[in-house]
Length: 338
Length: 272
Image (tube, rainbow over all chains, first blue to last red; front, side):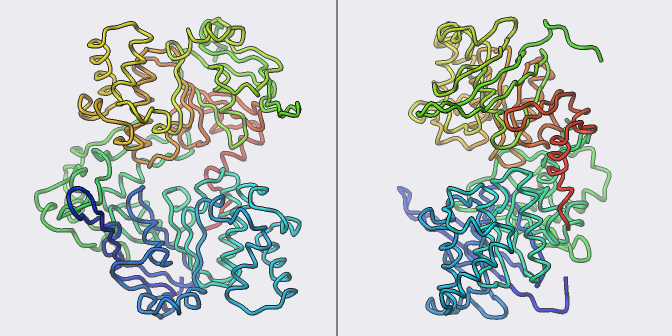
């Protein structure tokens, strides 16, 4: 990571609210509640959290597949939220997206060749033979045989489809790729191949990745930095090793201690949260985790805790935990061993 | 370690082969000479990737495969009885009452137009012949057992009012209400969040350790296997590649495939 460079993508105060009309009048669902993040060239930033945390909505708002309610998204210095809609296609050439489900994100009525030609047609004026040559290069670049170009998505395996999705994102030579659970629907053997491909492509092109995932194993190996999201807010952020070795927010501790690891006999103690993620409709004041947190204090209910330093570049939004961990009360933490 | 006595085996699959027959009459083999055993009171994992045949194997135990499936050889012996020799009526004595199954998509497995409580009570009354009042009491107790909070109130709710994790608990309660001797779990935590997954796995391990429930857990996730199971069977392309204790398979895998699968699960070949 080159700290001297400017961030290629920077997001500040991003908000997304949905208005729900129902019997009780209009209510507000806050999916994203003031998210800040920066990604530098060549860097992978992972956004982790469980379903309902708002991590995919963040990506959709950045890509403007969903219109943000507030906040700023800057791509290579340009404020995208201030641009008129007409100017967006050009501005967005630098940012592409790869989706989780390659079955539904590839048009079933288009061949591989047509899928890869589409972004070229939209963004560049190329003659037919140049385009065909470019498609051939792209297929080779993601290790797919040229023979696949007349095939339809349904005729490909899951891994091949995800390679086509990656090739499509690379077609316009972007600076940033938003990866929304790119390996979630793949077998582990294919998952490794796709991660190796993404890693190689990143090194060669100095791409910045926003990697959205619930698979903590993958995040641990793949990301440079991690942001942990819970109910629309970032509750912890820092370098991957630091967050995994010293998680400083109860939610991060619960997530990491719950994730299964393929090693026999690894005894571990799991931090238990009570209940499930609450509804993002009419969010409570105070810490979002308060209703489930074993460390909850009266002060937690008063205001949303800010992100506090927990290391050099590691921050967590829990003022209580740092106090507990420095005292002798660790035996009071509710946890189970399996 | 001595080999288990036949009477210690709750499930003994011997040379089971079969495949799906296309309308044109061509056979696509799915299971090829599958042989493994599950010991009584143990938590056994059946592991494999997409297309390994692990789900087809589990559905075969209950005779739930579509009619296009044709068995070509083998036997599935449950507690001394060859299930493949049973007709539909005979199988019904085992299904639900002695062998229960839990599926991946819990909300899809529940009927959307009846309350969760009624569905569990129906199973209970059919198989155990108890009164409505007794069935309600047993259902509430079982939902408590799988840690559904406010079980009595939850019984009145419909599946769409349940989260994925709660629906999976309800499905577990339904599977357990008849006190089966063998529990088949087909990817029971796939698609659930990790904290919820860990809660469900805790319940499964607790049932196995404290109540001696013989369990066959079908999964693609070696992380889940390593943290829960006693015995492991690794399948690939319809064949058993490796069997052994969890420790043997995870720490000293013999087959090339198991070794590769473990390395991939640990992301050993992925550069930082």
